[in-house]
Amino acid sequence: MTHKQLLTTALGCLMAAGSVAAQNTFTISGHVPGMEDGVTVRLMSLEQDVYKGELLTQTTARDGRFTLTGSVASPTLCRVEIVRTGNYSDGSTYEYETDTRLMVENVPMTMTVAHIDSLPLTYEFGHSPLEKEMNATVTGGRAQQEYAAYRKALHPAEWQSAQINARITQMILDGEHESQPDSMAHYERLGKEASARTVKLSDDFIRTHPEASISAYLVGRKLADPFQLTAREIDDWMACIANTPDTVRLARLRQQADTAKHYAAGQPVKDFAIADTQKQSTTLAAQLKPGMYTLVDFWASWCGPCRASIPLLKQLHEAWSGRMDIVSISLDQRETDWRRAMKEEQMPWQQFTVTPEVTKQLADLYQLKGIPFLLLLDPEGNILYGTSAAAAIDMMLERAQSK
Image (cartoon, rainbow, N blue to C red):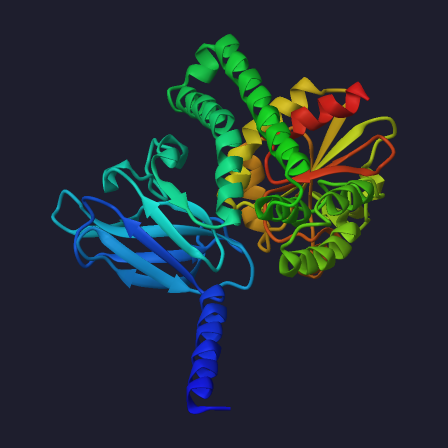
């Protein structure tokens, strides 16, 4: 081989290597007018924690532009955060972040927006990120194209649902839920309808885009919540996305599905020891009343969301009187805290507590990772549904009654 041939071959190998390297990295080039020089721009993975996120990479902005580089094992749901600084009335400062979501894969990508003030924030009192979500344009890669189509399909319904929920919250804060019960009932009905419509749109998207990376991600989200799918539904969703090109995620999902079947809806309630307010030992199974639905409420005095959901539980208790019973089980470690909370809340249904040992067992029995956690049981003692949202129980009861 001549010297020229050797040189040509070497250059070809270098170009091929460069091409492979390029395929193993992503570059996100952003143009955001109004962005100050020197601010930090972060790329956060939302795969494990959709709220807090996990840092993948970060950079510093210059002349309204930034470039984020790195690599992902497979298409990954992320958030671009631009860190901004605000001022309190006393002159001190605080940081807050913008919130632009995208599906990142190892390709060149771009992010553009008219002005930084057009971007939603991760948190803004009285405002939902949905309000400004569609202002940014992100392009690059098949996964992002699919994600953009998903958000276009879901955004109108989600935004409508957010506005209804904001109205309900405002009515509660203003006391109008008591002075205007008919109006409150109207908005609650609208809220349920909007929530159901959003779920249907999401499910329809998965079924009509089974090979989309976002569809596989959404199935993973379904598998993550215990007692929301039956074993057959788990199999059906896994079959739906079986041909996804995201083989890395699919392998994880198969393992996740195997675990999820241990916590599938439809199986008999798993019994454990409890104690009543008189310190008498009994079991959960002994509290189930034949022919009635049972709502098992795991809570604690120190849990703010638990206490906030009690008014909704009282509404459910009244609306489903004679058809559903509630059994509240406190995870409080101090008896005095439990009894004080019971006195303050005046819950007109059975109250029980468990030992620290049983609390540990609950993590395995019910995949109990946090509270509030509600388990809805059918009249035969089988698990219908598990959720942290009391508002979802009424809809599940109506669905069960209609079958």
